[in-house]
Amino acid sequence: MASSSFDLLPQSIITSSILQFLQSRDWLSFRLASRSCYVAVHGTSDVFHAVGSESNKSDDDCLEATDEKNGESTPLKKELLSESESLWKFALVRDYGFEHAPNNSNGNNNNNSGDDQFYHSIRSPEDTNDETPFLRTSDVFKAPTAFSSWKHWRKIDRRIHSTRNPAAFIPRGERVVGPYFLRAASLWKKIEQWCENESSYKSIGREIQSSLLPGRGLDPNLLTSDGGEYDAAISALKAVYSFYSGQDGDSLRLGGLFGGD
Image 1 (cartoon, rainbow, N blue to C red):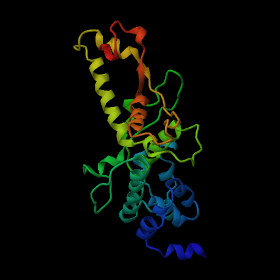
Image 2: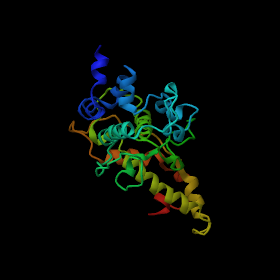
Image 3: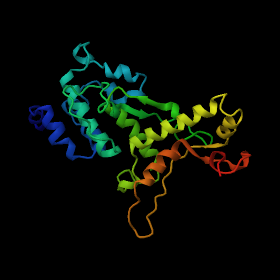
Image 4: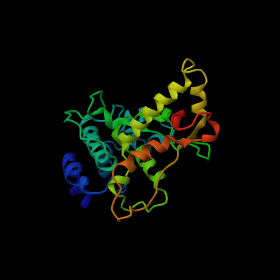
């Protein structure tokens, strides 16, 4: 059987020489082919590791997932987790603009400044309506695995580009760039904290905060006048616009953005 031959391949060969030549979304189908395929993608055969926050299990529980079918109660084997982590870090670099980190011998989630970036992501609000921002600064979190992080970025990506075919090509300058969203969240968080500070120019902070409009998913889905691609500015704009989409000028006594001229 083909699966028997596949089982003989080292995990590193599968992740670095086979899967990396497929689109990341195809890995989700590949993992369903067999138990070995699932382990190659996730480093474990425990399906709860994949469903993550969509199940009743917490992300921390998934990190300590066990192979209950074999009666084991030890954490994920380090060597399998390492290969899986490397694979999904590669996906974060390729799909969502993260930077390559220095080589890490164990591949585990740690506090290394280069490796740590992959685990920062943003949860999407559970319920959305006209009054709900597309993203909230309070929903930035540190994921337990690179796959969990990628999964949340993919959800943001699909929400922003919900009118497009999932397989449609998106120009580089229009894509979701994770680091842009994290920087935007950090900047908006500082503005929120300033506005909430009672000592900040009395009532001006509260007035500014009340004037901010809920963030929206921005997808112009248009070409430039010369038929070329957008530059990186449109990706950054998508990030900024997701948390707050402007100001209600009628509610401000002072003119200009944040009361400036």
